[in-house]
Image (cartoon, rainbow, N blue to C red):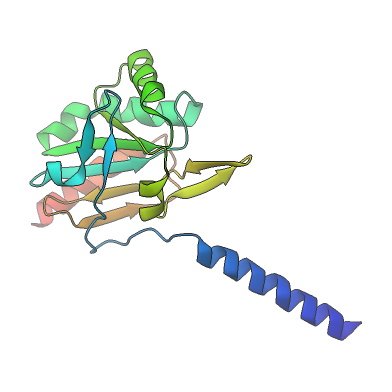
Length: 178
């Protein structure tokens, strides 16, 4: 019986590691940000290379119209002028479609770009995939990308409440260091 328990436990641990290995890992600071092109809330294609020469706050969020996602978006919108002064743009990404993003922006008064990743290609490239109630969603992660396209800071499992302030502080520190 003891040998069976050891074998069973070994198989369970191996299965957990195999499942974790299947999940794409987020790119790390110091690496080139993975390229992408996605439609925004107006249906226009937006690609990372359009923002060469600017800082990019690329934030992934689970779902339009949910409480945490709305708080996070409102805080980025509240601070939009501070980001603009720091030569930074905000790009939000979820797996919701263009129409959902358009409605969300209209209802919540959002003036930055929300990108629709309905094929999950970009959330996978950025290791920001999560499963919730049988749905594939974007995990709440953020990547601060410098004007040369290099990831300078990675935020995983973000708390939406104070996140914009945290990103602004790190952006200030990174810009001061140069």
